[in-house]
Image (cartoon, rainbow, N blue to C red; front, side, top):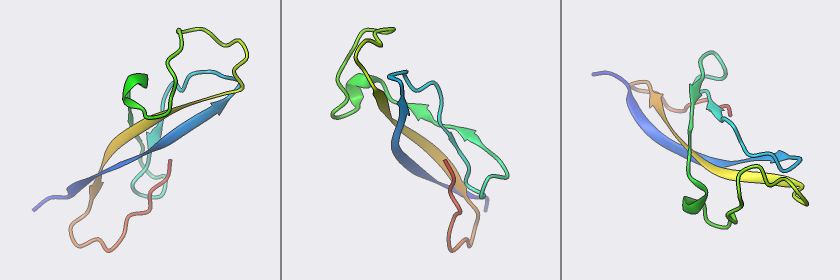
Length: 82
């Protein structure tokens, strides 16, 4: 049998009020990287909606992300990097 997958998720944030463009996740300590799915703002609890490009008076931005990462057969742990 091949590797199974586990779904991981978290919040990404940035300064200067810029929207998050991409989140990358590594299940093997940084040897390989996968692009996570960024959830739409309306699916992120606590993230207020705002017009695209509206950076006035915003000091930071955040969004919820999700990714499916492979877990090798028999693995006791996974060294996850984001």
